[in-house]
Length: 336
Image (cartoon, rainbow, N blue to C red; front, top):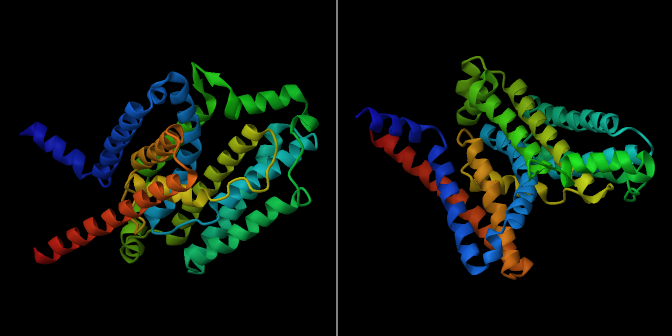
C-alpha cells in the first residue's frame, strides 16, 4: 500500500507523466532509427547528438520558464544572434573572451528586463512585446559590426585564446563528453533547482496557473515575470556563445528560428503553452526527442522538408494532447 501511494504521489507531480511519456517516446524513436541505420548507435554519433542537443536544451529551458508563466519569448532567437555577434565583434577587436562575454551578457539581460517590464508591468501581450524586441535584438546583431559577419575571432585575440574559447564551449571534451553538453547539463541543473525548490519557482507556477489568485497570495507578477524573462535572456546568451565558438566567428543570422526550436523542446516534453504545468525534465526529453528526430532523419536520408513536417506534426500533436487533457480535467472538476 505504501509503495502504491509513493508511486501515485510521484505521478501526481505536475508534468511528471508528460515527461515520462516524452522519455519513452525518445527511446522508441532512437531504437527505430537505430534498427534502420545501425550507425545511429555508434559512440561518435551519440556524442555528436548530445552536443547538438545541448543548444536546444538550453534555449528550451529559457522558453519553458516563460511557457509555465503563460507567456512566450519570440525574441529569444534574436538574442542568441545578438550574443554571438557582440561577443565575436569584441573579440575580433582584441578584447579578452571573458570580458567580451560579460558585456554581451549585460546587454542580453537588458533585453530580458525590457521584456519583463513590457509584459509584467504595462500588460502588453507577450506576443507583441517580444515580437518588437525580437526585431530590436536582431537589429543590434546587424549593426554591431556594420552589417557584416565578423572575421575569425582568432584574428583579434590570437589563435591560442580563440582555441581555448572554442574548446570550452564547443570542440573540447571532458571525460570523453563534449563540453557543450556539460555546459547544458550545468545550466539545466541550476534552473531545475530554482524552479523546483525555490520560492521563485513556486511563484512562476502560481502566475501560470491563476494570475489573479497569485496576486491575492502576495505574488509580484511583474517581478516574477521579469525573472522568467531574465532566465530566457541568459539561456539565449549562453547559446550565442556556443554558436560563436562553433563557427569561430560572429554570424548575423545566428539563432534564426531558435524561438520555435525552444517552444518545440518545451511542448514536446509536456510544458503547457497554456501555463502552470510542466517540468524541466520534460524539456530535457523534448530537446532530446527533437535532436534525435533530426539526427535520425538525416541519417536515413530524409529531405529537410520531410524533417520539418514530421517535427511540426509532433509539436501540434503535443499541444493538442495538452489541450485535451486540460479539457478533460476541467470537465471532471465540474462534474464533482
